[in-house]
Every structure is written in C-alpha cells, then in structure tokens.
Image (cartoon, rainbow, N blue to C red; front, side, top):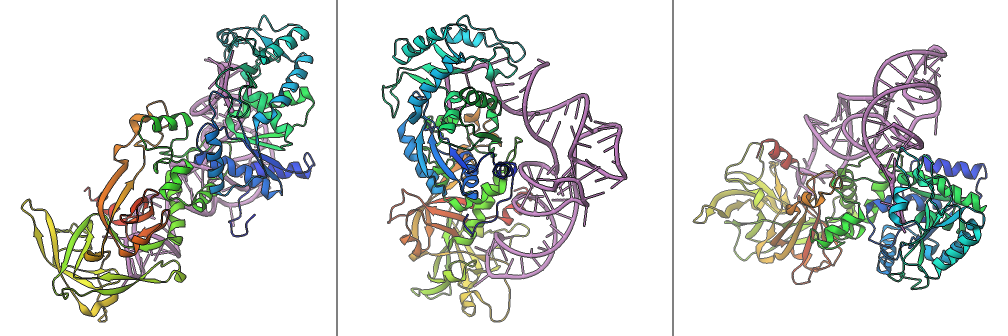
Length: 559
RNA sequence: UGGGGUGUGGUGCAACGGCAGCACAUCAGCCUUUGGAGCUGAGUAUCUAGGUUCGAGUCCUGGCGCCCCAGCCA
C-alpha cells in the first residue's frame, strides 16, 4: 500500500479474508474485477473495484480484470478500452486481463460433465412456459416435461444446440436442481441459451449458445483460481447456486462475499437510464460533466485522489444506504483547496472606474498563488484605472449584513488597493452600467498602514488586460434526491443545471492555461479548462462552488 | 403471505459483553487580504417488547420497518 494514503478502516470483508488466510482456507489471495463491457464506468463501479483492488494488494495478492462478455446482444469492444482507461485513471492496476469468452470451450466441457452426472438437461419449453412453470415466490414451480430425458439424449441435443441446429429461444440447457426450492434461483436455472445474432465481439460466429451469468461467473472464478469473489448484495441469493455448480463439478471453490452497492443522492447509477439520458439528449454524451460517470467526473474537474478519498470514507457494509452527495463535494473541495492555483475571474462583469487613478497607468500587483502551499509562490497581476468586478459585489442599496461595495463604503480590492464607491452610472432602463470609485494610494497591496479595516475583500480583473472566456456553470442534473426511483427520471432533469456565461473576464495569466488545468477562482469556486477550450478564448467548467456564507445569509433573508 | 439480507444522531461508517465514537451536514463563536481555508464549541442516535447478565448497541425469544429475488440480463 502506498505510504501516503490514510489507513483504511477494516470491514467485514477484510476480516473474512484475513480469517481465511489464518485458518488456511486459502494460502494466497486473488480477486477479480468483473465489468460487463456494455457501458462506461461510474462512481458505483469505483467502490466495487476498489474493494477488489485493495483486498488484493493489502494481502500481497493479485487482481485480475475479467470482462464478463457472455451476452453478444449487449456487449461491444469499444467499451473494453474505455473501461480500462477509466480504471487506470482512478489508479487501479491488475496483473492479468481476461474475458469470460476465453473460457467458452472449457465451460462447455464442464457443462457436458454436468449432463453426464444427470445434473443438467435440455429443456424444449418455450420461454413463456419456462417462466410460467417457475412458480411464484410462494408457490413451487412445475417440473418440465423434458426434465427426465436420458443422458444420451441430453448430450445429443446439447451438441446440436451448439452446432446451431435450433433457432433462438427454442431450447435451453438447465441445471437439474429443485423446482420447489424456496429460493427461486435454484429452480432449475438456465445455463445456456441460443443466440445466433449478433456476432460476439471476440469469438465472432464460433458460438451460437452463450452461458448465463450464473453458469459462467463462478466457473470462471474457479478456473482462474480466484479466492474471493466480491460482489453486491443482489447476488447473495445466487451464492447457493454458485456453490452448487462447483460442488457438483468437484472444482476449486472460491468464496463469494457480498456488500451493498453505492447509492449516491442526485446521481444516476443505472446503466440503462444513463444510456437513455445520453440518447434523448438530456445530457451531452457519457462524459457530460453532470454525470457521475468517471468520464463525466474527470471532465468536470474531479481529481482521482478526491474520488479515492470519497470511497475510502463511505465504508463497506451490507445494509442499503444513501450517501449524501455533499460528502463527495466535500472530498473534491478539500483536495482542490490544497492543490489548485488561485486566480481572479469575473463571471458577471460590472465596470468600475477609479476616478483618481492616473489614466494609462499600469501596476503589477503581487498575488499569492496558493495560500495552502507556500511553495506555489507569487504571480504578477496588472492593475489599472478601469476594472471589472462581480455584479454581486456591488449593491446600490445594501441589504443587512452586506459588507461589499455600495455607495460610501470602502472595500479592499484583493492584492491591490482600498477603494470607496462615489457614484453610480445607469442606463435609460435604470440598469447599473458603471460604478465610480476613488482609491487610497497608501493602501497599495491591500494593507492600510494606518491600521484601518474594511469588512470585505473583493476580486477584480483589469479591463484592458482582461481575457474574455466562456464559463460553463454546472449544477446537479436532477431536482430529486433519488432520480433512480421509478421510471420518471427524465422529468427530474433540471434544465437549469447548465448555465453558459459569455463573455466572462479572467486574469491575463489564464490565457496560457492548458486543457485539464484546475484553478480556484477566488471567492467563486473551482474551475478547470475544458477539452474543447481554444487558446485564444479559453473555456472553463465549474467543478464546484466555494462554500458561500453570504449566499446562506441571503437565503435566510428570504431573497 | 416463500426465501435471503438488514435496522446506531439528518446522512454514512465504527464500537467484536465494559465511558456510544468518527466523518459529512447543521448551528454558534474565533480568526481571516477569499463571507474560502483553518480553529473552538454545540445539538441530535442504538426499531420495538420481553429475557439472560454485576453490566446489552452487542447474546436469546417474539414483533415491526426497509431492501433483494418469479430474465433465455448481469
């Protein structure tokens, strides 16, 4: 484990693994990441991946990456590369990359063994009949009329299924367990189904029967010598079947342990619904910054360190829980606060003219790059007679507890001078278009030698030096805490979750920023340079706002 | 109503028969050239009814709540 990481608290899985090593149930540890290549990774996958990854490395074990590609109708190879890229970005490393499809031949031979043992049979019932005869939660199922075929007939039929002699849906291979089992998973579960089209992304047209999850997963774990098959709670009821197959076959039996999956407020984790959001254009692709896909979060400006910290803090347990999105935000802010360079940027510009400042004069002010990191040093910021400040930082009539600029009030321009507002210029409609101020030359740098105080410091950008920029403000995608509940998720999409600001004015040094650079715009929030940004006109994305005490006060005042 | 799982402040996770703690959130104060950050403090929790025990969040029994399972998805 990297020494600079916080010690991970123990949990029931780590304890179980330690116990298995201690009593020699296993003499080594091997885990696996089992993504299905049918979509992009999201924050929920990260939790699961990290459990597998950490359990392995904390025990000097190995992690395999095994793509669960048992259904050619859903899976595509384009996702394989994307999943690897995203997993690497988050910092996960595996020693071996495999595919469920690597084991199709061997798995088929194991199926034949089960048939010969009388533990599997070919069922000719239609899908509807199979479903109808499965029974219900409270009533036992009805045995298939084909359940007692001879081993010879089953072997013959299975081979002909494999050879493509039968159409899709006409037959399946089923485990022969117990149609009256109280656990529905054990009522003669399907092992192979017939799928002729489309071609598999790796095995092409070689196969026209494909294994079901239950038949593939555990057997693959066993073949790979995986010791701990860690998965989410919904597989708990599959564990008896997982074990049943391996016991019948007499093969190496890994231990499956389940934990609860991540639920995050205001986030969408369902792959199906995620795809829908992309398809209907509710978001702009899988990397939309409002999505909690890894690609979306990366584009939004989250760091992998912040995501790792978040996962580390939420713990591992078995009960259904909902993590407050504010925790994720807090992790991102904490990380970005320590690492990002400070800059000044004005999102909603308001012109300020300093009447007593010499026309044409320019001064270079020293600005701290990161107060959390002394080694980040200083930069020069040009100051002149005409500036832009934030519209929010001026009020003609200040509400209670408003400390910023208003007629007669003195504030500090960050790293520059104290200024006092003398007058306001309005247009015909009464909109404030210009604020006139005077400055105190004795406060250069922002220090008043006479010791007088101001209650507020505001940021600014020198108008003649300002770089115009487009800034995109992203907010929560959904208006509802749990958009995944029910099927109305599209109606909870917040149309105001993206606001495009143009033009904004940012300080001169930002014209040299590179794609992916992260900054704190002082008093506003954390921003990063979008991949679509152009050198002449930079384009920033807001990751998160800074905590805003004034906004809270204003809200309580019932603005 | 079958089977499986799970109940600890607002949220999440600890406490492994011995002072119910940590983080986020909330509130208050201090500090501040970011109404940021930081510092200090506060409030709020063991689903319920019995039982065992010197002592129960933890063990036992009975209730109750919530989640998952009836794909030829994973």
